[in-house]
Length: 322
Image (cartoon, rainbow, N blue to C red; front, side, top):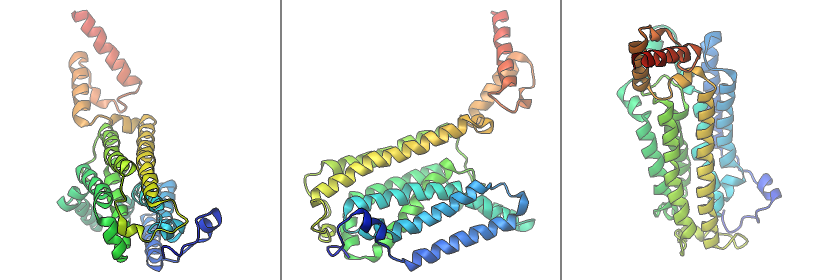
């Protein structure tokens, strides 16, 4: 593998495959276990069919990315390595999180067994792992640590690290997106405004890595570039192309996720009610109750007609008092 690879073309891209038996077995097990758990939940499951489709698509894409030409050329052509990185840390985890696997796991059990699973999901180790700060830190450390250090050269010398890096990217992406895209039975559940802000903030490490690689004057991974085929772009041009991909595609994917989240909030009354968090929403309800003398806790949609009418009555009373 490396310098003996065929020149990259459409035919070689779609015609180059490796079985990757370990990844295929993992994919079959993940899909099978998920579907069995979903079936055990029965008709009362809150996980809709489109979420099942997201999980299956995410696991399938995981195997395709590693077994296809993307994975085959990734250790020889650096911009293709960057494509693999972006798929594994952004696209695959987003689909897996949208599949709500923890909800499927919880609903597969009943009675005391479900209570035990719920206690595990609310335990402090799971709470720490599912905290937004943990996800952002792991994501940032992974992006910077694998691109701006000697990790690539070490991986080129020890091929087994390639699989470890791929697993790391999927796990890092999942931990990052779980509290931001997921609506799972874990703690904490940050307000949607915080989620959107963290998605935007996470573009910073992508941008830093992209700019550093795009502007470097020397090849930062000489050992890895020994595998560079003669037909590929010059090593430095390859690094610059990869940097441009990280900057443009990385930020673009992150913004796409943020926009998708904003649309989901706008189109859902329940999510709109959780936009700013319980403290700010409680303060708003308290102000309405104080100035109108009404029971605003009964208002289910904070942006609905009832809430608007109560707000108008509060303004009218304030005008009368003034």
